[in-house]
Structure formats: C-alpha cells, structure tokens
Image (cartoon, rainbow, N blue to C red; front, side, top):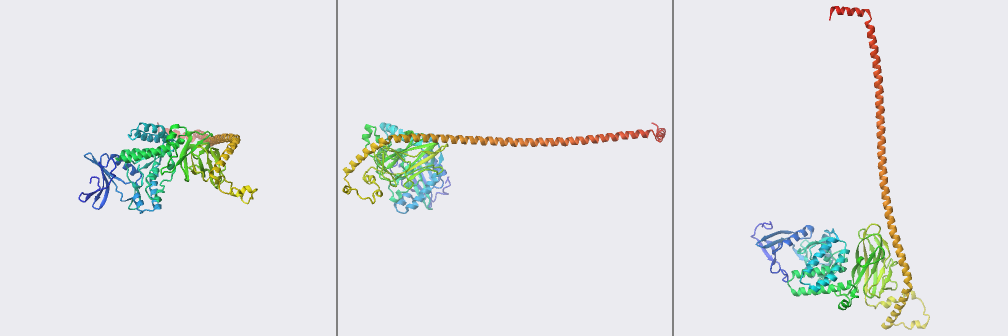
Length: 611
C-alpha cells in the first residue's frame, strides 16, 4: 500500500512461485505472484539482502526499458526485504519451444528484437577498464575453494594468460546484459513481445560476447530447429578460445556460489576442467614441446558437442616479421565448414598477413578469404572460387593440390602457413577484419582424388601403351601410401630447388614493403605540404583583404582632407570679401562726416541735447 501498488488489503493475496530447490538460498528466499483480486500486480521476492538485486534491476530497466521488468519497490522490515518487480505475464521461450507453440522463424525474430535492445547500449571503453573487470574475476576465483593450490597454479600459468591476450586484442566496448542470457529467462508477454528477466547478475560488461556462448550452451535441450538460432550478428565469439575460457571460469564460480547440490557442482567442475584442458592444449599446439603435458593431454581436443577441434592462427605485421604478440587464434572444428572471423586492432601503412589454417596434419579446404574494413565496409582483398587464388602463397607445411573452386592443400606438419598479398592501409590507423571459410579433415580418404590430374587434361587422349590401362582398378592403401612417400620426396627436392626463388620473393616483398612505407611517407608529406600551402594562401588572402581595407581608408581620409581644404578656401575668400566691404563702409562714413550738412546737424544735436 505504501508503494501505491494496491489500495487495500481486503482483496490482496499471494501465490507461491516454485523455485529451484538446489539453490543455496532456497530456504531463505521465496517468490510470489502478488494479486489484487484476480489481477497480478507484481512479482514479489521475500528474503534477506535484496538491495543489490534492487539496484541492478533499476539500472538494467533504465538502460533497456523496452525489454525489462520494471522494479516497483523495496521495503525492509525486521531484517527482511520485500522486493516488488513488474510481473511479465506470458510464457518463457524454453517452454514455448519444447511444447511446439512457437515456430523457429518467429522465435529467431523475437530473440533478435530483444538482442537489438541490448546492442543499443554499446559504449566505447578502454583496454585498461576491460583488464580491471577481468582481474576482478581472477581475484574472486583465487578466493574460491573450488580450485586447489595446484589448480590455481595451472590457471595462473596457462588459462589466465590466454584470456589476457584475448582481452588485449579485442576492441574494448561495454554493453548491458542480464548476466544470465538463457532461453528460460526470455519471456514472451501477452502482447507477443520478448522480455528479459532475472537481474541477479545484471551489469554493464566488457565480456558481453559471453551471452552468445551462454545461449548456445543452454539451448542444447531445445528442438533441433531452435538450436540453430544465432541471436547475435557478431558470431566471431562462438570460436573465441579466450572468451570460452572466461565463460567457463565464470560459470564455475556462479555454480559454486548459488548451487547447494555438490553433485551438480562436481559435474560442472568436471566439464569445465575438460574443456579448459582442451582449450589450453589447442592454444599451446598440443604441448608438442612438453614431454609431460603432451603425454597427459594427447589426442585431439573435443568441442562443446564432442567433435574434435583444431586451432587456426592469423599473424599481422607492417614489415613482414611475425610474432605471437601480433596474432589471433580461433577454433576450427573438424569435418565442418566454418567461417572464421578475425577482428584485429588498428594498423597503418603496409599490412602483411600470415594465416596458419590448422595445427594438425590432414586436408585443408579453403572456400573463401576476405579482408575488409568494418567501419567503412571497404574490401581490401577477396579470394574465392570465382575470383581465383592468385597471390595466396604457400609458405611452409602445406602442399597445394589440384585446382578446384576451393583452395585445397595437404597439411603435412602441425604448423602450416600461407602468406597473403601485401596491402596498404594508408597513413591513418584503421581497424580491419579477416574472414576465412575453411573445412579441415584429418582423414585422407579423398587425397587420391585430389592428387589425380584434372579430368579435362586427359579427356580424348589415347593411351600410348597397353600398360596405361593395366592399373585401372582402385589402388590398395599401401600403394597409395608408397606413392605419397615418393611424392613427398619429390616435394622435398622441389622445395630445395625453390628455396632460392622464395628467398628472392621475400626480398621482393621487403622491397615492396619499403616502397609502400615510402609511398605512405610521401603521401603524408604531400598532405602536410598541401595543408601548409593552404594555410599560407589563407594568410595571404587575409593580408590582401587588410591591405585593401587600409587603402580604402587612406582614400577616404584624402577625400575628407580635400573637402576640408575646399571649405577653408571658401571661408578665406568670404573673409576677404567681408573685409573689403568693411573698408568700403568705413571710407563711406568718413566721407559723410566731412559734409557741411552733417556738421550742422551735429551742432544742432549737441545744442539741443547737450550731454
């Protein structure tokens, strides 16, 4: 009543809402539907220490009012908090999907509408701020009893550096999330609008990409058509090794803090352990240089759904010298067409790229390769079956197979690499992205077909001898392997003979890089010269305008002087004329006094009016 939710208590009632009995706060917290008559007025939570949820709910509702449940009141009495939040009438997404009450296309549209509201809260940030948030998670994990001393050392040695590198390489931005973006926390209200509930972990975070991983992980129990829904436009997070490691650590921490079921915690810990071991092993190239780790972690890492995965790595440089500090890694599932999206930091000048497609031996199929500027959409490089693969050069560990629409190659080492053509990003720093469509298989069953010459090359040709038709049947695997060994020897000989050519090509690339650098310097110098010249021209125009104004002022002053001189001359002439008139009048008066009549009149005047 104090909050103005109901006017009287006569028709007020509470209906309990079932809660998860495995939560630690199951005995100390309860949830209800608060009703006034038959009308639901709010979702009421009763328990201790609800102030943090009240604060998070208010901040999330202010940031995303279209999809949030509004917090209504927080009341405390005798150490118990009463938190009222808008009750979203409707059904959660998970239930609708499982009961077949929602079609996949409509579901995808609803989720994307919800995500667009979250994406509307993006803000630019700094790497240091992202690192502070990361360090806060690391510190809380260090205090968790789930990880023993040896576990802590393993995390410090292998897992934390992996996450730190990813944070440094990712453009820092923050976005709001409810902290638990899963299907059962999305409710479709009575008007058919998607709403996001449960704000216990709501915050503005740098690790918003975790929402993609959380949604995919907790959607596994949905029907197949719903598991393919991708809520977020940016799918690069789905193959991000460092972000998955962050997600796993945070999930382990939340499970330990909120769950009272020790078996569930142990199951989560086992999954987190296995996945982190696989991720770290893939990141460190299967620990090939370690005698002990390689023995413990031998075998291909398994993906989230049991499929083996490999690791692709992209290096960038301005001079052609590549290092781990300037590289990015993404996972490559085996036997699956995958689109890798590398988002890389700002660079300027010449751009050298080296792509290591896989860290295993097998067949590599590249269907497309694209380099572009995300901010402007400008495409710097595009290679596919239609444009061809000119300029894409095998550096090491690969053998190019016969021409097909795909770039097919045999990886015969655990560190194969390709060199892309050198590109120029110009003098101003720009973010760029690289996309690669790739499929990898460790199985060599398709290798004989790929090694065979193109059909068109032998069409219509008659055999030169009867021996050519003798081995028309498929060859045995041993024969194929023998031929492969012979081909490998021949490749080694050719590689040795091509070493000098490759060295020459590298020298050419160095020269091209220097030319590109000089061109960039020349462009910068020309730009500076033109800017300086424009500045001087503007100064000259200003001086000319000032000079014209000064000359016009001088002319005006001269005109005024001439006018004053004319006035002075006219005044002098008038004065002379007045003087002449006065002299004439004085002369006339003198003459008048000399006349007799005048003298007589004067005498009479003096006699009659004596003084």
